[in-house]
Amino acid sequence: MVFKQLSPTQAKITTTRFSKISRTIISAILAVLTIFMATRLGDENYGVVIGWAFGALLGWHLLFARKQIHIDIANQTISTRVSSIYLIAQQDISIADIKAFRVDKDSTRQHQYKLSIIMDERLKPIRLEFGSLQSMNILAEKLSDFCNKTLLNSAKY
Amino acid sequence: MLQYSQLSENTKVHIKATDLPLRLKLATKKQSYIRALALILLAPLLASLTMAVTLDGMEQTFYQFVAGFLILLDLVLWLLTHTLVLDKESDTRYFELSFMGKHLSKTDPFPLSTTELLLRRFSKDHQQFELKIDQLSYPIGNFTETLRATLFVANHFDLQATEQISHFPQTCKLDEAQLAASMLIKHPCAANDPIQEYPPLWQPINFARLLLPLPYLLMIGIGIKLFGGAL
Image (tube, rainbow over all chains, first blue to last red; front, side):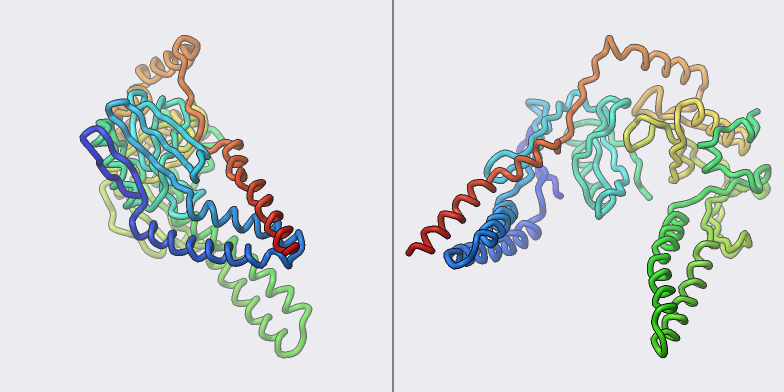
């Protein structure tokens, strides 16, 4: 996950170019396979059609699913949007209410670190991004500089 | 001066009384990895024990050796401990690896007074409280028991305790009166100060939206089958 500043008041967090290209290649292969199977569907029974539909759903999401995190200082929002041509999930966070950013350990994910946004200290922190310690630390620093909020040093171990 | 017996059960899970007047041994992350590995090894151990009993001939001997080896390995891992030691006798803190209580090796000692002691809210959900001792954090429970644990360690080893509760996000020195006051102020006022709770990004309905193209794809598939079959 990298932080890209678009203008003095706007920025976004996106995936690296390498992961974009590799995902496009894999999803293109799956798309070709799906279309090829579609031409053979005439001979198969209904069970295969249902299986094909599920496979096509997977291919659709693999090809089109995107998570966009947009940071707007002028409107004071951080909006996260998960879409796959159509909108799947969206979350808007007001920057003014943010108290701090922090990198925490996360045992539920592969790379084990997450970037948290802390609103009120009595509330559970909001998890924004996941990744390795180094990438989370870099992202947290850039984000806290851009939004002008404190960065708590937590997970350095 | 807090006595060990005044600490709560939750605290005693982390702060054990062995060696106590002189040194405090705390479990580390490596310790949890070692224990996790010992537990995971039980699976191949049980499998090879079953094989050693049910098969015969050459295979049985092989599995008997494997089971014996795994039992030995598991025993070694179970008896190995990696702890953070706060040593009052030599006024240092260090990490120590020991086997069955006997010291094996230790890392470079640092002066005890440089140990950082922090009382703060549990980083996962901010509902409970935890005690952070120099890079390692131990979630304990509610405010009173964690405060007692912090004071116990601070008094026993002459450390300066800090806290990150009264003036979040800043860390400041632990002052009991100020801390108690800030805890009282924050809790009953919830009615006057509505906290805007942000719903998480992924809620159950979002998972249902993932399946949205499915009916259309099913119709396309059935359509292709009917046309393809008819042609």
